[in-house]
Length: 317
Image 1: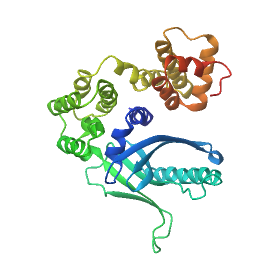
Image 2 (image 1 turned 30 degrees about the horizontal axis):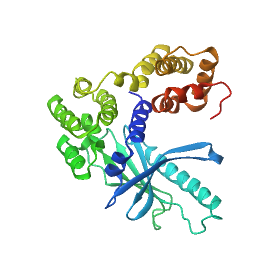
Image 3 (image 1 turned 60 degrees about the vertical axis):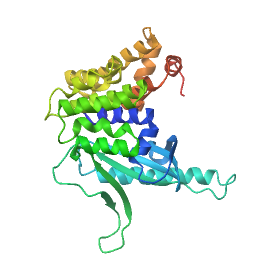
Image 4 (image 1 turned 90 degrees about the horizontal axis):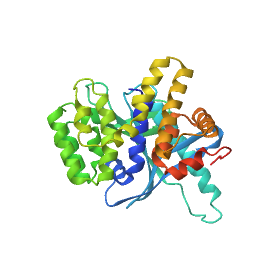
């Protein structure tokens, strides 16, 4: 299971369920009101920043920045630092641009969280850091909270979900250290009782993907699928069909073509008709420019009418 595949489904379910994400991952007391996912860009680096949720809490507005990592590789801390810093720069630019209308406006503070999906048995510290100052000087850099969900038990995640009023924790149940088919079935019953039909579908889609990454316990995906519907197949396109096509081709060009065919199929299913030749060319151009993750967000998040406009030739929106 590729890291991009996991990132895609977790970003998708996060955007669909912002309240659940905010209640689960934001470390503050009192009511929390998600406002919007920030989608800005650092022009100098040509980097789009779309992993931060603007939230209104009792302490004021803040940005919740979440990263998912399969394991704690050497570059994870740097990635946390880079995204946190680039986001701060972009927010500062936007605040200065609006200073004429609101001179007292200050950029919101950023809270970064790393969710670890697998790794070592030894417990992780609650806080991770990327240090830019010398060791013999006061700390400068970025700190972030570490949530190693794979080290939790099913009961721990259920307790967190209950205490924080957020079912988001339960999507990680297939990764927990004591999970088995019976315990996961109990989690699915909790979700069925507490979630709306649309919420349940989004959570099941994420859980089915994460269940595939658990090499220790087989059959967990079947437990999740027994609660979900056929819509899971569409939401899992990139990590099933796209991954299969990519392996078959075995080269960068082949992987791109495999994902193009998979994406084209999903667009056609959503539109209820075949793509025209110009639309297919537009899709190929945007796949090369934006990447499979962002194009995958489009096919999952937009209505058929919006998809048709997005595919229209010379449409740069």
